[in-house]
Length: 117
Image (cartoon, rainbow, N blue to C red; front, side, top):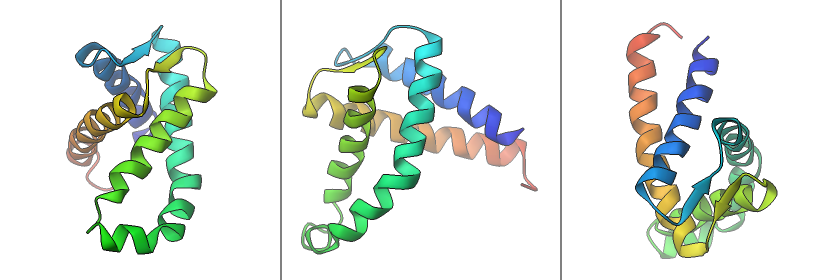
């Protein structure tokens, strides 16, 4: 149940990102659901590999390169889906930052709703 709530709230967060920032466009809630799934899939499969491969750069930049990796995951998800559009890398960086902040809020709220899971 927690996973379904997280997925729905992540889709709503993507819609909020599109509303708050003009560089990100989402056509419908269905597109947001699919985009939230693809972003989550890329973050769970591809992101750890990229973090390990870019570890020296991440250490030299004191962890700031992780923002670039997050933006690349966000941008690549937009490139894969027709209903989800990001205008460029800068828009992907700002959009991924907003989406990450909203994700932290969602995780905090879900932790309070489902304390035992």
